[in-house]
Length: 267
Image (cartoon, rainbow, N blue to C red; front, side, top):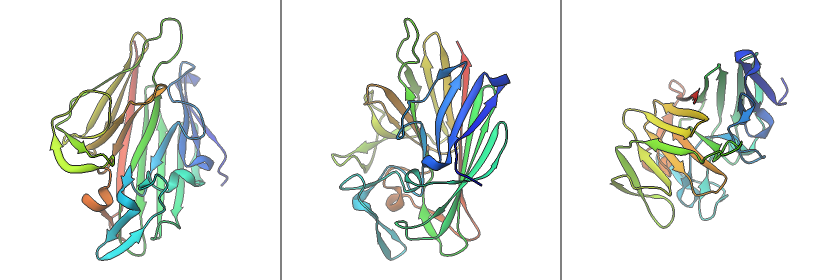
């Protein structure tokens, strides 16, 4: 099938999501009552982070004793995986659901397939992703990087408030990577990874307009609020540099799977 944009609708058209297989498999838009929640542009929306999340130190990782070097697309590190820069294929689509796939290839050194399912309802968007291999096993990560608009527009619109309770914060070094120390969560501004052992649970509130909860069974989330126009809440299967510090192995009999659900209500 083609990799043209896919429009999903729910609640008699009051809710609409745009899936962009040809633009890195990202969610290009999410509208509730005609109001856009995601920052617009080729590099915004919500993109999948796979086969790694955040920064990998110096672009290097080990698979067992085998070293690999990734391109340094955020020098001196490699950042956010390869799939966001690639064209995905549409496997299945309907009114409120789409399934898209991406085959891992250079510069990632291992063969594998990524599948992402997008499901829309009147009050939620669920993203499910898997990485599978029929060949060699390899470490990988899955995550999502949404850019939520800081304000939703309209007269008197207030900036979004981000609320969460984390068990710890990964101490961030000068190189923007975790040092390995866990510290008590610090106040905003953030470009930081937090630990939530019971699952990711972050609420964004646009006062008087909308409340949106980002949830996942995974225990890691990066929160980024240092840009003027948008904030990011990124559930993921491990911390930044996790290919090295907390690898999750994809094997021929055990894929890596993760999901996140955004649920909203009007205020």
